[in-house]
Length: 545
Image (cartoon, rainbow, N blue to C red; front, side, top):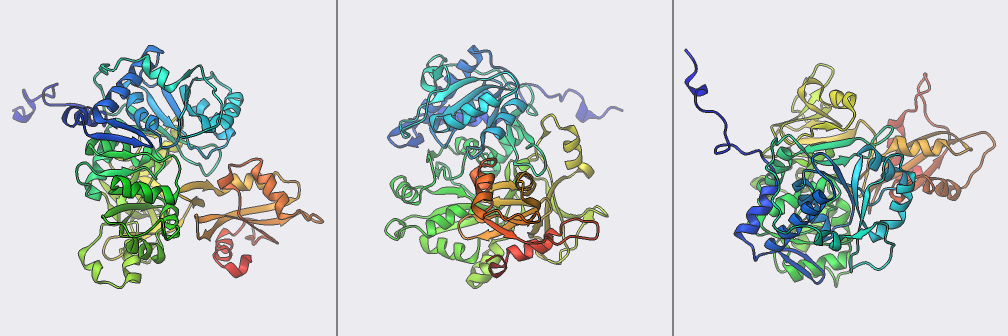
């Protein structure tokens, strides 16, 4: 007999719609048309106005021939145009590629070519590096649209049209075609890469929708929150918070660059309730001028990701009246996928113990199916003893589709039915995860990933360098920075300044080593450099002087 639940109960347009975060924008515009959506300097937009601007952008893109699975790249700071393109590009059926504004021309050129960008939005501040990148491209050049921000003086126009004029070409009543498949790509985000070129991580509409809601639920954000954009929107699409804030019908307070004085001023002026950032952002606030960081008169919540926040940061933020929550994730997981969910009894612990508890990578967020730490030799979970190390693995709807044009890397990362993070960790008896090491030797500086192998490749190009190894060393401002251990060729004696200039000529500034240590490198009997010994040295101020 046929199963009764399979007969006449088919999926149809009345009972099913593909998940996409674009609907959040339309709902806020319909329900709260006159509520503030975006604030930037003297600019003020309502949700109705923002929706119209996004519709114009989508319409203008389609009029220029942009459609499904075409890539729209952007090189923008946290300005209104950056928020709008998170909706306008996918409304046109396109895939949004937000470029890291700290990258050099070579990396930008690779990404534009690899992603086959059809359109490139560029803020005038980055015109010089982008102009160089366009010259270095091997493929067809994209349509360049200049974003002329009144808040920035300088730069040059590269394209044939300015952003506001481009919007004027579009229809404010544009209706996007219904999304056919929630598995369709919505964005492309490049990792820093640990070997060779960076990998292009592809997000789908379903994952973007779910993680946008995940942010609301896991952080407990009340409706109409006021969110300050300290986190770059280029980083994992701002951890999906452009879409989160549309679902929240809140206020996006745009901030062109991180500046403690401006941050405190904006928090007071707009009664900011939430912000996100790497540990360095929180440290900057703690160490700001006392006149700027006078006690706040309302509650502020902050998310911190990257290296676990030290005791001084948690204590300092508490004194400022800011409650921070530690989260963990990767580009491949749409940003934060685990949260150090706070337990009520932790509040009774001394500050140092509370900081240690709050500094762990935590447990799965609400809409993540699973996170665990596996012994990959036997492919089974490690015991919850806080001692046995394994690799963090993820599973669920907020894990990427895969790597663009890299089937092998995609299959390797999903081997065994889990996404392998490459981060080594332990699980404590209470089930909370704590990272112990990074198996891929990625250095996280100011929230940005730096490939040690990329820096080593540059050092090896110097005529006086025989061998090089780059590891992380603690840094009060950036969390950690690259430290280069160098074995010189016989008779060579280059200065540190010479090596600095060599690295600066080939690397983005934030990737350049801050410390150089000269001497023989420890090696195994087979000639492999023993990086674990160098990491121990790099953690000791006396050893690196």
